[in-house]
Figure 1 (cartoon, rainbow over the protein chains, first blue to last red):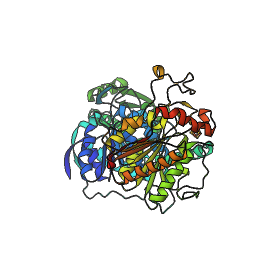
Figure 2 (cartoon, each protein chain N blue to C red):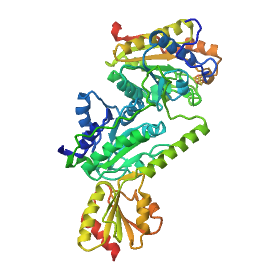
Figure 3 (cartoon, helix red, strand yellow):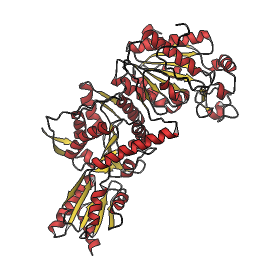
Figure 4 (cartoon, chains in turn brown, cyan):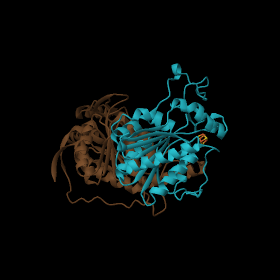
Length: 350
Length: 246
Ligand code: SF4
């Protein structure tokens, strides 16, 4: 079915189609339509919808519902995600699946409500306390947001881990045509660990406490193995006109879409440029970037972001010093234009 | 029941200090469950604090929550499995300081679970600091000159705060300092669970308990302290029982 939908609403609809049974949220711009959509649909369909008293409340309700084996979602924007970080650490520690949407706005602090990519580091480097990882998916269109949201529920269950959809205000607020596969059936996953209260079996506990150092280390090693597996199996990346490119742009999310237009324009002008767009921000497509860095014809990389270079470290680590990585970014809710990106490219070619 | 070990308690020996009230309160919960809810689905929500290992002592399912968040987690649990008997077990630092927002809103929403709130007037697990429930004049390691309301403010009376809320169905404050009150505590737990299973709304029991270790008293002296000092500030009784018109 084809529909014209706002990004936030499309994500909500995708979640419902993916079998989301419980939603816990708190209003914050620019993601609020997602919460509103869930309020309208989930209550009617017999699901659980609670507008919590705070983001802290919401993520901990999600923790409780996920413990019971439900498919659970919560959503917010930067300042609210900061509050949710406590709960995200607990979810990761207790190995509980949960889909968390962050429709980013400008930061730090209250920042503003415009589109920005200011939470890359928070999303990909843990954000909360402890050695843990969240799978981070970064859509660059409303259609892709739909597909990645459905995928997010599968990944969360598969790995018993929180999964974050990292979009920005632009993605949340823009309207695009989206297509839903009406035949899609969410996979039912056995959850033999879920707390259900049944008394005729061994008791189950969801917990992140390991008071004995040896046991906590063992747990952390186990999590590390899981993260290794995710790294091996779940990297997603789009490589656009990058095969024969001499200059590789790297960009994610909505920003990458603008870069893509710039790449098209530069190609028309005869410049051999391409784009590598990480779709999973964690696990980061290190090997893919490394491969381009090793190519002789590649001269340098240009990282473009709507922040001051939060992904730049990951790009540089992947490139391993083999090539120079230049950076251009706008921040504070400013969006780079195609012309700006082209001008920056030409300034480097001089 | 006599002195048989309740069936829903595991054989694990408890880690609490000698004479601590947690052991008594655990037993009371276990007795009520054995008597009334033998076959029922049961899910406990564990706190952060001295009772952090509570899930080791009962042989039914538990969700272990973050500090203060047990009532939020319990909300998610009960909404997911509405036919289960769900209770959170929380100390005073947990429910009356960091978790005040969560408990007030769970109560306001009329969430159908029971909070068991153990008030011993200190942050026990971290070494006896002042809690929101610490009574005026009480010396703790972080109120070394005694709690002075002019400086540290007053003690919080959570039960009295919750009574006026429409979502709240049952509120009682009980104590375990003597046999009579231990029996009253058990009755209150029984009634709170009943109220929950009748889907009447939020229920909470505040149990005045002791912390011999951090109070620097022997177990029997600590029970006397509840009687002689704590009761001056916290009155006992059933403050609200919607179903019975109280
Ligand atoms: S510190 Fe106090 S509350 Fe904690 S177990 Fe010991 S006596 Fe009980």
